[in-house]
View: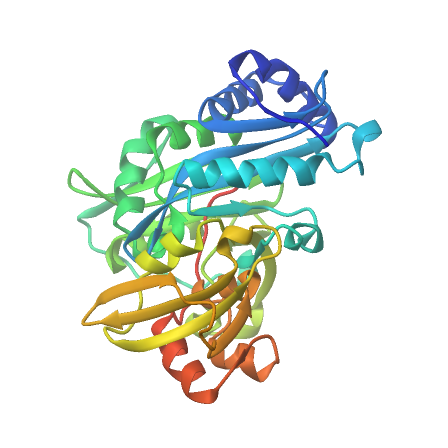
Length: 390
């Protein structure tokens, strides 16, 4: 049996060496600081002495339509080549999930190198990333804004307080996104030293910001949040003021909404969508008990959940909602389920990736038509959004 050990502060250097080797990353002062910060805010597991395989689970909180869940952001899943394929990562995952549950971490997110690989552990695609590309010559003319709104370039660290205020007010950040702690904002500054910031201000109040990079002949917009239309237009005018210096503008976002209808020539904009990050329900009872259901009443329904890697989630559960009060409890073994689905399909349904009706029509779940309709209406109908990487 592979022995998994929980790493401590003294193991940081050995784990960092493994991660740099596995991902072929050079050392730098900013990279060293970013990793040290990440390690300090993570749990770490490994096998082997000396260390052969390991991963980090960073302690985050996420906001799902006003409900806060603790989430473990899995990253730096790595092995030395001589240890690859020996089952070390599977053993680590088993222990990591046990520790996450003990720590009250209901969810886990990760960026997969292979979705097929991580589905073995119960992860499923929950977030997409959208990239909009337009030539500088095709940028639309932006209307003038209120003179009360100003935009200024600010060094990343100096802009953190303003960005945190705007981000914290955005509804887009409550669709499964991170509740960004102060340490995470500082980590972003170290991890992405080439990023620049412009902040929109209404008097002394920050009302929007854009994070961008100047990359050769490409102006890259990496994050943009705003409180209102005036802030959006002010930032858009700042961005388009660069049109003479760059050949193209590229905007990468977690928001899946189309922008084509906002352009006089929609065909000038190229939009691509790619699978981004995956999610895993670590504690299905806590997740479903506190989930932001979209209905206030739901007759009791028995759901059979399949979870091959976390047996504590598997089995028969009864969901009921009475005047907004939710119960999600173990059903008796003799109960007949009206709905059957895997933990992976539950991720897709609960994160708004695919409705229960669509999942049923595609043969991904089993259930009677009435249950699928009533339970389906209870879940979020809009896909979740994520603006971070770890």
